Image (cartoon, rainbow, N blue to C red; front, side):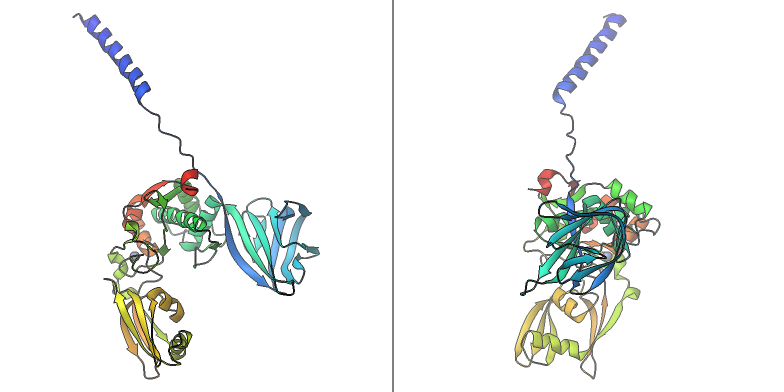
Length: 396
Ligand SMILES: [Zn+2]
């Protein structure tokens, strides 16, 4: 075979390969990522109570039931008040039970001295006399704007070198919001769900972290993961099923050691007054005096999973997390418990928060050591998938 012929053969063969590749290779589908609107409860105002409200530029007050524009004006500065008739601000009143305020721009709405993007929903709660007695305030905004506010509310986003922690927190926060929405629950703007304080504290590092992870969420077996997170695990994260945070075992929330959080110099010590202990006994009707507070079971990190209250009239078992909330303790990892002469107890422990899932302190340390967000997430949610939030995943 001549050199010319062999070259022609190579050329024809190459064209064939390219044609075959075009026939048999399926182009990767463009992910149909969604950015749904989310609603966050900001706070409530009781009768005659008020909070500062400031609006820059054009605004409209709209009836949620039929989208009727009730009032349209420019600028406002004053108070939003819970009046007997309904919401009132300055000379403006809305005698409707469900309205929303639409403003222009991300910084045009200020409530309680915080700037918010999105729309402010005002919902009236009526008493038996059909009078307005509570105003519930919610914010409706895009998921990605919400995630940005959460990571700035949850982490010190101005700290240099924690991009990977902010990225992993963005994915965890986005996932948690979707999980709550799928449960039909309302997101609260504080640590009971996720801290959200508007857009005043957004940093460039946080904006970049949200953009870099836009639409990404965690899943296990094609279901959005309940991606709990907390401030400091105290040496190891908890098993969500054992801690009764999940009704079924989840591989991604089985708990794992986090040695850097076990530092003995980071321990805390708190004293719980006897009145608080006795109140717990009375609450469960086992007598007015709490005689003992015993551990039923604990995990390998000394985290109390279940506790037994012993009163004069019997005993009652509670989850560790319930006891933590009632006694006002930072965590349930206890190293020492001393009963004082006056009946109060002094506890020495580690960690802050419930200890399930993502550990914020640990993630920041890992980010500073150069780990990327995927590695950090694999540590705290082992085996979980990171995937884009599609309409199918959002509405299964
Ligand atoms: Zn940790």
